[in-house]
Image (cartoon, rainbow, N blue to C red; front, side, top):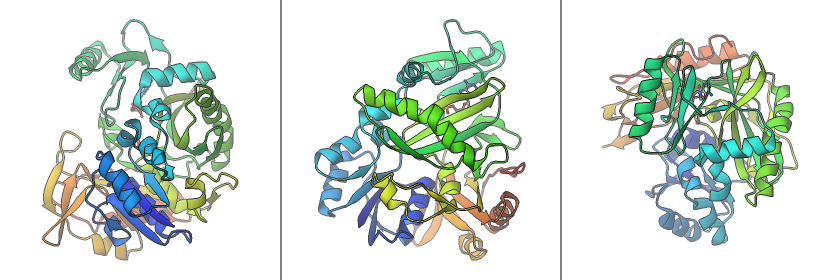
Length: 396
Ligand code: AMP
Ligand code: GLY
């Protein structure tokens, strides 16, 4: 098979790494890819937003399967455009991707499907959460415990110029549960955990995610099936019933509250950086499942994986470009997987090019071993302004 991966981050590097190990894949391409993906695939300088050029590229390459990584092209209808031209795609239609693209649509679907989520408040009063309706790259949510935080959250939401709503503030540990979905059937990944805040101890602003791990100490791999049946499947049936069947990855962001499991959000694609800790736990071939054959379950190994994100100076407020990066080869020599998230090559030199720069993934028999493997490898990497959390999977 000839596969084209769309995107340029750590999630796409993890997908390309997993696909490169598949017996079904003979040739891999990426658009635009990154310097890490370039070791595994032919990278084409076509941006994920340029749908016309992506459709042309997929047709020209006679691609057997296009795997779309990020949410923005899915919400904007890239999968529809490719399918319309007869190209097989992993990723939902725009109509189904609204589950991520519009928080009000997601709330409506959850209510209709009878899946518990945070209640919506007609009047803003702390404690509460202010959320903008559309895509905001993880930056459209303000958790407000005090009136001052609420005033700031409302101001920030208004400044984005999008509709927003105010909802109940839920408390408890979070988990991410991914499911490969084809209309009304689905196959669950094991649960994973993501670290959203920039600082150790979950302090500071929200980010795209500073690390992840799997398996979890508090939600067993075997619990995934029950969550799938109570959360994902009702939502998939509701979407199919509305004429928007979901084909692709349905990601539930969940919180374990004192009153039970609540949905925080749905995403229409693989999560970043949870994917980096989930794919190394799989044996077997992911490609038939991505191609829509859900007749088999995932082959999940007992081993653990921990991902530590190395972010650039100024993240999450700004991205960093052109700072030289040292030590990647030394980190890889420890046996860890070093995935590129925001890198570029300048005259053959690896440099920063984004907010989250590299993802160091350690694999081991236990979370404790995987965690040491990740941090031991990360210790070899250095660039000016590098930031990372030291407590990823610390309580694993
Ligand atoms: P979202 O973009 O909806 O995933 O929200 C980003 C993060 O904000 C989540 O991972 C949670 O940590 C937090 N969050 C969102 N909604 C709520 C809520 N209703 N209660 C508590 N925390 C929330
Ligand atoms: N890990 C959070 C996300 O992908 O949205």
